[in-house]
Every structure is written in C-alpha cells, then in structure tokens.
Length: 77
Image (cartoon, rainbow, N blue to C red; front, side):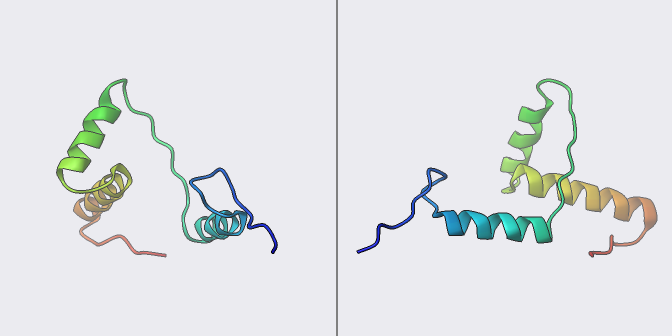
C-alpha cells in the first residue's frame, strides 16, 4: 500500500495545502494595517465580544465607514 502524504501544517496533506493556497490567491487580497502597541488586543477583544474574527470585524468596519461616507453600500468585485 502506498504511504499517505502528510504535511506538518495542521495535519493537512500537501494537496489540501496547495488547494487552499490557490483558493486564497484567486479570491482574496491582503491589506496590512499598523496600529499602536496594545491596540491589536483591544480590537481583537472587541471583535470577539461581537462574535466575529478580527478580520471580519475590520472588513465590516471599513464597509460601514465607506457606506456612511458615500451613502452607498460598497460594491463587491
């Protein structure tokens, strides 16, 4: 029997890791922000208190600010 491929990345196989990387490359973009020391923990705690990941909270905050600024819901690509 052939030995199953294993990866050290969260128990995922190499094929699963490649598929995940391809999906992310095709569907999302990275945006890096910088915050003052200690602010990351405050943002994370607030997001968790709202039942969201930090990423989901930041994206929602940006969308809400853009809607407030323009009066329109941001268009999704």
